[in-house]
Length: 464
Length: 72
Ligand code: SF4
Ligand code: SF4
Image 1 (cartoon, rainbow over the protein chains, first blue to last red):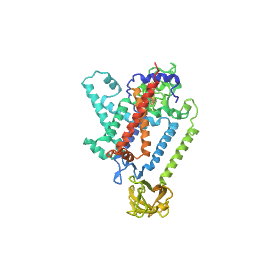
Image 2: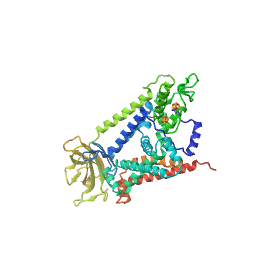
Image 3: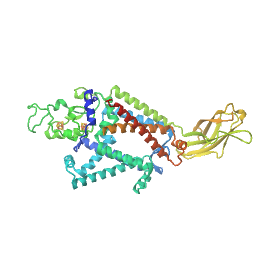
Image 4: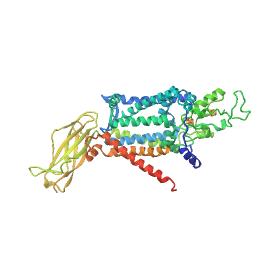
């Protein structure tokens, strides 16, 4: 896929400021349309269903921002582990590169939320306003009762659907049953309400109004995906050699004798296109690879008794009559990087420490002198049990000669996933202090498993 | 309309990333203590952080648009 050349970039710019013509995609049926519907149903099912799943008496998937803990089924991710989330994002990006190189914009056509929700919104619109022609007629008709009724019904349903979507979204970050009840009883307030409304508004705006403009003007991926394309990438293309010269004809005409190609110039491929382009003009970056034009053109070809596939999934190489190579350096390199990162993340998740220690100095005083002339520092140790079972831990400290450690309740206990706050006092003889601030090290160790241990450094403040 | 998108949208994206990075390193509880807002929840802090970042991005984008205009 070629970037819009310099000459067309100015026309695109003009486009940016010209008024947009609303696109009313015609409905299609066929193999790819069915695949798209299945993909959309599965993805929507996952999206709306997952927050309601339970695991061990809690929400199975919850990115608990207020508590700074992420639950993904049996796995609990702590702020200290956010590196894994970064890793996941990198994996997602690499996977996208990989699939784009191999299969083009498969993501855009079948799985992108923008596509899925736009299709859902279009489906609702079809149910209420009828097919493409009826929609266009309704849009052109003056505001009579029928139009007011249909339009307000349409937007009410869109808005309800959006609200549900927004609620679900926030349900990934806060307990969803609680938000849902408070939403229904209209007692949701504050930031939670703000985010539900914000996301709902975004859904309504993007899927109801902006639609293909999101893909064309807003999507960062759409802008750079062409960089991953090469002559062996799967694309949707019109077969120029076979189709041209295009022209109308009757079915029983011998079009070859008339000097015509296979395209009957019925313009159906343009009418079904959700981004309003003509695939016969060649590959364009507006094309989201939805394959609607394939379905509709195949139907036409069938009616005309021509072979199918005038528009089809193909590669630039095979259009030129060359062989398509699946394994090529670009694909192999993407795959290798992807596998390496995945392996590294899996390895470090399975080897991550089962306990975490944070040491906070007491904020109120630097140090205290005891009745016996010793120096005392107070710390709060946060012991985070990241293992899946409860543990008891011992605490020790080192770094200063004859350092004494005082803890009220030993051993420290922490349930799985629990944070134990332990107030700890370190006492040292001022004679043993070399400077005003000395490095000390706390170590905690599980009693039942010496391998679960971790050390953390802190400062001991004294009078000099 | 498209100009509005060009201002709001990139700053929205960047604000999101910035908020994630920021809250990754700074526990909002510490911020709450530092500013002395006792009754602010962490969610509020995240949200306000994000809004601030967004606002800054919007201002930058508007300025960029402004400076892109020819002088006359
Ligand atoms: S749908 Fe097929 S036959 Fe009809 S105009 Fe498009 S390419 Fe030509
Ligand atoms: S050109 Fe075809 S595949 Fe591309 S967006 Fe339009 S209908 Fe979909």
